[in-house]
Image 1 (cartoon, rainbow, N blue to C red):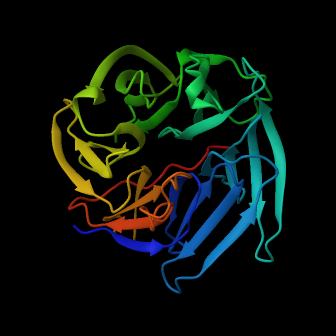
Image 2: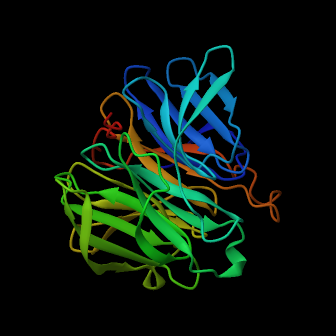
Amino acid sequence: MKAELIVDARNTVGESPVWVPEENALYWVDIPAGGLQRWSALTGHVHAWKTPQMLACIARHPDGGWVAGMESGFFHLHAHDDGSLDSEPLAQVDHARPDMRLNDGRCDRQGRFWAGSMVLDMGANAAVGTLYRYSAGEQGPLPAQLNGLIVPNGLAFSPDGRTMYLSDSHPLVQQIWAFDYDIDSGTPTNRRLFVDMNQHAGRPDGAAVDAEGCYWICGNDAGLIHRFTPDGRLDRSLAVPVKKPSMCAFGGTRLDTLFVTSIRPGDDQDEQSLAGGVFALDPGVKGLPEPHFKQ
């Protein structure tokens, strides 16, 4: 299960990996750089595009391109082979402060796009982050679905879509919650503690759910990817050769590869030569196709 470096991307904050099976390619973002990137598993070639705002999370759009959570809200992105990129605003959000952006996000099993917001400076310890849900046709400002978060992260949904997972990765919180999820209305209820990551190595960052319904979460600062069973029991931990894995996603032709993005800290790059890279692991289980946004 040794991690393989597939792209020495040196991303400042690599996030939101999404496998596209018909292209046999992995897409992901570099948040502060406003970068969308693509790695071809066939050729090893990496293609990159620049977005007009910080780019936090992506999901595939049925009309082509991507639904994206950025600084001011949700956008439709079209990346072209010549390196150009078109950006169309879809719905804005009203941040509690001007120094905020969207963070971790993905679609539920029904194709609604979820993303949380955070203050750019994590050191501010500001619990003003909000969880938003975007459905086709909404223009915003979008209503808050959940308030009081510092760094919302770890969004994922069970295979049947009836459980939603969410974490707060801030050092003052470090908890993962589970919610009952109404698949008809897209409403989470019955929030409860799923895992207290203060009892495990690493802060809870980006996540994925496998075909067996287990929840995989990046242990940021610990160089680990943890697998928790649906009852919250730690099943296994896989190591990556960097301190700050940021998000994981299943991909490959059989959805049996776990791709992991990472963060390149500004203070110890010499000690973390592979930091900011994208890695591939053999997790021993298969994943699920990532849902598309429903138009």
